[in-house]
Figure 1 (tube, rainbow, N blue to C red):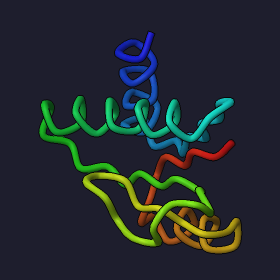
Figure 2: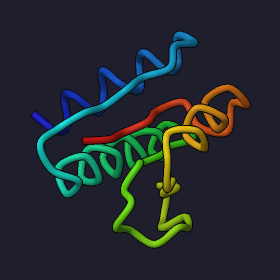
Figure 3: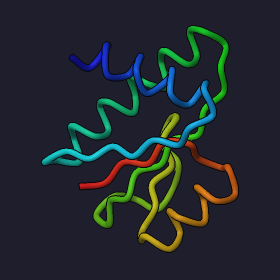
Figure 4: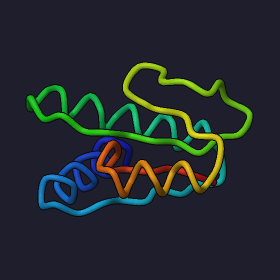
Amino acid sequence: KTYTGAGMILAAVRAGLKVGVTATSHKVIHNLLRAVAKQAADRGFRIGLGHIDKSAPKQTIGPVTFLSDNRKALASLDSGTIQVLGAT
Protein backbone atom coordinates (compact mmCIF):
# COMPACT_ATOMS: atom_id res chain seq x y z
CA LYS A 1 0.00 0.00 0.00
CA THR A 2 2.80 2.42 0.84
CA TYR A 3 4.67 1.76 -2.40
CA THR A 4 1.54 2.19 -4.53
CA GLY A 5 0.45 5.31 -2.65
CA ALA A 6 3.91 6.83 -3.02
CA GLY A 7 3.85 6.13 -6.75
CA MET A 8 0.45 7.80 -7.10
CA ILE A 9 1.63 10.86 -5.19
CA LEU A 10 4.77 11.11 -7.31
CA ALA A 11 2.71 10.85 -10.51
CA ALA A 12 0.42 13.64 -9.34
CA VAL A 13 3.35 15.91 -8.50
CA ARG A 14 5.03 15.17 -11.82
CA ALA A 15 1.74 16.24 -13.47
CA GLY A 16 2.06 19.61 -11.73
CA LEU A 17 -0.32 19.01 -8.83
CA LYS A 18 0.17 19.64 -5.13
CA VAL A 19 -0.78 16.77 -2.83
CA GLY A 20 -2.10 16.65 0.72
CA VAL A 21 -1.61 13.54 2.86
CA THR A 22 -3.50 12.78 6.04
CA ALA A 23 -3.53 9.78 8.36
CA THR A 24 -4.27 8.88 11.95
CA SER A 25 -0.65 9.17 13.07
CA HIS A 26 2.46 11.18 12.28
CA LYS A 27 4.47 7.96 11.98
CA VAL A 28 2.25 6.75 9.12
CA ILE A 29 2.55 10.09 7.32
CA HIS A 30 6.32 10.23 7.73
CA ASN A 31 6.66 6.67 6.43
CA LEU A 32 4.66 7.54 3.30
CA LEU A 33 6.61 10.76 2.72
CA ARG A 34 9.89 8.83 2.96
CA ALA A 35 8.55 6.33 0.41
CA VAL A 36 7.68 9.20 -1.95
CA ALA A 37 11.18 10.62 -1.49
CA LYS A 38 12.76 7.25 -2.29
CA GLN A 39 10.76 6.76 -5.47
CA ALA A 40 11.51 10.33 -6.55
CA ALA A 41 15.24 9.83 -5.95
CA ASP A 42 15.19 6.51 -7.80
CA ARG A 43 13.75 8.35 -10.81
CA GLY A 44 16.02 11.39 -10.53
CA PHE A 45 13.09 13.68 -9.69
CA ARG A 46 13.42 16.47 -7.12
CA ILE A 47 10.46 16.85 -4.81
CA GLY A 48 9.71 18.97 -1.74
CA LEU A 49 8.00 17.20 1.15
CA GLY A 50 6.53 18.86 4.24
CA HIS A 51 5.00 17.51 7.43
CA ILE A 52 3.07 19.55 9.99
CA ASP A 53 4.01 18.00 13.32
CA LYS A 54 4.19 20.33 16.28
CA SER A 55 6.01 17.73 18.41
CA ALA A 56 8.81 17.16 15.86
CA PRO A 57 12.00 19.18 15.65
CA LYS A 58 11.59 22.30 13.52
CA GLN A 59 14.01 21.26 10.82
CA THR A 60 14.51 19.11 7.79
CA ILE A 61 15.21 15.46 8.52
CA GLY A 62 16.27 13.56 5.44
CA PRO A 63 13.89 14.46 2.65
CA VAL A 64 11.11 15.83 4.89
CA THR A 65 10.82 19.39 6.19
CA PHE A 66 8.92 19.62 9.47
CA LEU A 67 6.68 22.65 9.82
CA SER A 68 5.25 23.99 13.06
CA ASP A 69 1.99 25.51 11.86
CA ASN A 70 -0.48 25.83 9.01
CA ARG A 71 0.67 29.32 8.00
CA LYS A 72 4.24 28.15 7.38
CA ALA A 73 2.96 25.09 5.56
CA LEU A 74 0.78 27.13 3.21
CA ALA A 75 3.62 29.56 2.57
CA SER A 76 5.87 26.62 1.65
CA LEU A 77 3.25 25.26 -0.74
CA ASP A 78 2.66 28.68 -2.30
CA SER A 79 6.38 29.30 -2.81
CA GLY A 80 6.91 25.87 -4.38
CA THR A 81 9.35 24.78 -1.68
CA ILE A 82 7.14 21.76 -1.06
CA GLN A 83 4.70 19.97 -3.32
CA VAL A 84 3.48 17.35 -0.83
CA LEU A 85 2.20 18.22 2.63
CA GLY A 86 1.28 15.75 5.34
CA ALA A 87 -0.66 16.41 8.56
CA THR A 88 -2.92 14.57 10.94
